Image (tube, rainbow, N blue to C red; front, top):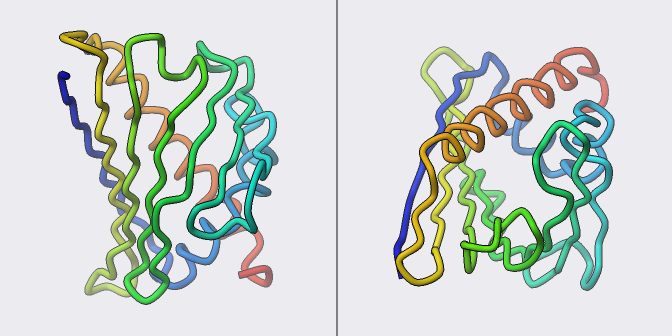
Length: 158
């Protein structure tokens, strides 16, 4: 099994607790602020916490239609969360799973650093093309910026 990892880092002027709170509402916010990527995020099983299963329907701006993932961890005290995509055409037929680790790190200026790493476990010796990895990286950055912009535009909500 081939394993491929990517990492994205984006700085933000928003404080870490606020960013974590905003991303805790990802299921509701993402389809509103980036409908070309996310049509809907729905809870399939659980209460949204660890062990829950969620389904994502993707928009026309990405080359796949759906994925299903399980929530692996939510650590509010360390501003981190993780989830594993285990089903759907977003796995491109060559990925067994994709585990996402997200962490918000306070910066000395009062803002934050958003770190998002993904570990892809590929089937057999399959390898993800570089253009696919770059598409994922750009999509993660774009989604972060859209959610950050929403938080800045609606400070009373967070």
